[in-house]
Length: 295
Image (tube, rainbow, N blue to C red; front, top):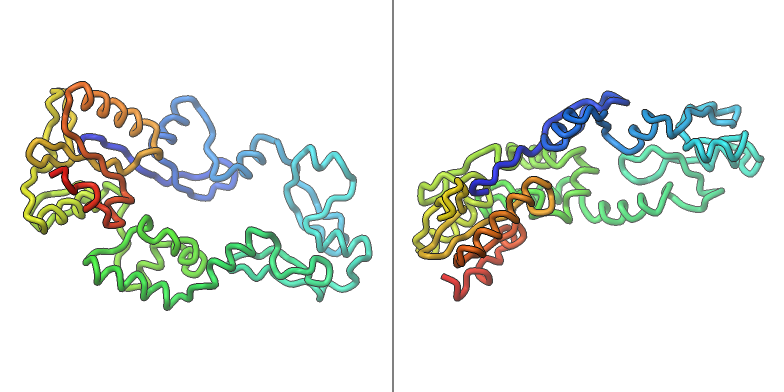
């Protein structure tokens, strides 16, 4: 926002499994600078660094290949890929027909109600199922469409955090849920400019929301005004003698937080009348509380 420019994400391939994954350009450039390998998960990192061992399940009817930590692999000569295979091997389960797949959408782990007494492979899958089962694909689509017609824009994940996991499990990704509702997904944050209702060219959707909020209340304002520091920094909005800033990436990017701290230091040194907003206040409609008696 303002003069703080941060590259958000790029797609690279994991050095272990070769699957593409998202990485911030800052972390990518840091890894290139120091010659670090880059992985999509701690599991891939562990495998690549030799902290895990490739094992074959000791159940003769399975022989599935799986990874196990070296410390665990040294404890026993018999290693099993699942509780089911262990139980079958030791004769606690006589038929594999008793097994079934975990009932959580997208999970393919095998569980058996006879031995484990549950429908899910873990407490995490059980909790996620309880959250996801509240929604159907149709109900998610309707929520997205209702918000679109209410605000005249596509909702962002931040506004619907409670719906994010269910949408991912049912549709595969958040963007596919947006497409199912009949809309084009929002671009990467800061990758697109928005035109406010008063004609101001905004750098982000959050800026547009604030600009439209001020315009609707007939509050005169300027956008992208240079601070009096003479160092190139700009504020998002200036209302009379009040400087307004939206800190949209706080606690998400190290470099962004450094620039924020420097900006706040200069604002304090210069004694500026200042209002800062975060994304929750922008998207949750709490700006009345922030601006009341300040403008």
